[in-house]
Image (cartoon, rainbow, N blue to C red):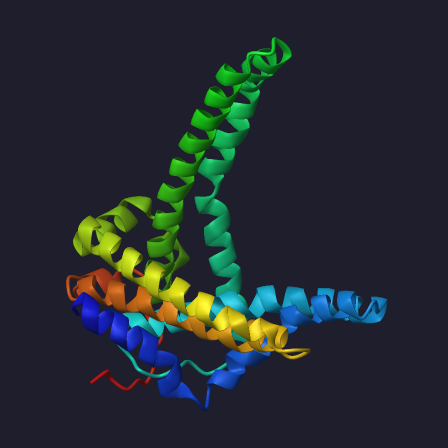
Length: 266
């Protein structure tokens, strides 16, 4: 699928499933409870909001993983809500993020331990330019490593969605191979186009917040879910470009993929 069709289908996706959009809207109402409680200065609502937030964490990542799976199958349908599967998938997605963030976190802690004293001496000796240069260089290096592993995590998530296997998603060598199959240049073009379009939509829709009383809720519970569904579906579509490279033998090596009925994109 070429980039133009991929992006176009991604932005059409939520609106092809108007009947199921309220499912996502309801999910995001959960994270709106805490701000409502804080604004209303009601401790009971805040307490309910904390519980709702944990429910959000347990449900939403798994549901969006299902959307990635739909994209990887080039399905135009939005997944149905399944409590058990969504919680199970959310746990797998969160576990995946923890594993892939171990290296950036370890690098940051190692840098603090090894370079921290030297940087501290610079500021004690009022060597401000050297201090700023050292801190800046350190932050840039850590940020680069973080971006690399965030990118790996991105496609590990797509691999998890397609193969329905956490083990496969944790095989970094296979994730790197997937990235090579898609093409670094194709990924960069996709990232740039999607980032620009999503940010434009975010900026334009942010004016909704100015609507008294309900603007904040509309933005949190409607705008953000739509943008998230577009982004996750787009990731799945991008990954679908290499799926034809996998044969039956590849699929037999991992857990059998859950069969879903879907309507092919026309």
